[in-house]
Every structure is written in structure tokens, then in C-alpha cells.
Image (tube, rainbow, N blue to C red):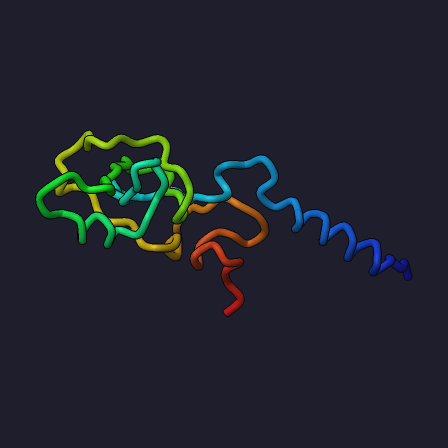
Length: 125
């Protein structure tokens, strides 16, 4: 019977988990399966959609809708938006609002078990 050293296994696991997301910008976003719109602030970072809805009156809003085509990446709140545009490529009504967190079944990028279940490690029913 072979033995393995638990402290070594634990140390390796901890090192891998500590580096989840090292150098990968995609760890802070998820891939959408539909045309999606998200609300951004003036610096181009994602904010909750209610910011765009609550400032829809006259005058210049400090918040803007950002449109991402199906297959694009939606950042989590506070992260910069990329890969889309402030003008929709398709009719605006064809875009859906993004959920606050990655929905179950979304194609997420990240560490162990980060697919679906909001990207929190998923599964185990």
C-alpha cells in the first residue's frame, strides 16, 4: 500500500487555489448566451441596472447602458466592460438585462468548479 503525504497535498491544493485567477481577466466575468445590456458608470465599470433605470429622466445621466452581443462576456459589478458598445448592434429591445451574478448554466471562467451555480463552486446536490 502506497502512502502519500497529506501536508504536501494540502500545500499544493492551497497554492493552486491561491492562484485561481492569476493573470486571467476572464475570471471576473461570465459568458452570455443572449444579447445582453448592462449598466455602467462614466468610468466604464459595471454597476447595478437600477442605476440606469433611476436616472432615466431629463438631463445627463452619470450612468449608461452598455450592449454585449450573445457570446460576449459580462463583468461582475465594479469591473470594467469590454467587447461591447454603448450603441446596440441590434434593435435595443432584443437585449436583455443581465442578472446580478452569473446565472446557473452560464459559461463562467475561473477556478475549480466555477461553472454554473453563480460561479461559487457549484454543485453537489
